[in-house]
Amino acid sequence: MPKSRTVRRILGPSKLSLPLCALLLALAPVPVSGEKERAVHSFYDLKLPSLEGETVDLAAYRGNVTLVVNVASNCGYTYQYSGLEELHHELAPKGFSVLGFPSNDFGGQEPGTAKQIRKFCALNYGVTFPMFSKVVTKPGPSQSAAYAFLGRSGNLPTWNFCKYVVGKDGKVVAFFPSDVTPESPELRAAIEKALAATPG
Image (cartoon, rainbow, N blue to C red; front, top):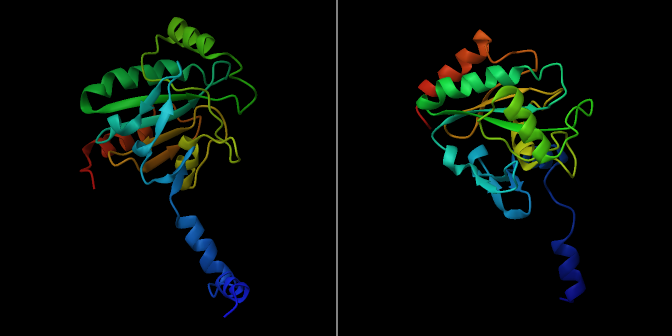
């Protein structure tokens, strides 16, 4: 058989229906940015740059519960830094950490450099929880690998200070919008439930 016919036969129309193809694509794991050969099945599979530019392997948080928050310095919700720091300090002994991801996506309210962000957080709110480099949360080619994964939960931030509770297995177990404060009973309950859960 001529080679050209063989190629046409291999590359011919798929017998899979379009709905089935769409379903398979939706279920496919998100690749790590720059490492397409390695699929992300857990938030803790990611390696991300810290606010100072050092690579942080989130595998260090596997078995713990984290609260991922897209933060901003000039937002009406910026006061929540205080509550987030208190939450981090209070629950750290139980295997919990707040992870802050500065973002300029909403209202241009995080325009500063990494040094400016660090200084602002330290001087005004005494932030000690881990902070990561500025990210894009919205879908598109520039979207952070962190938010590409978090978005698989069906929720992406609609403003600054949206919150994801990530369980011990690195899967999102709860999402809360900006106006749910660190002191909110519903957020606290979701964190405590995740801390009490046995990793799958």
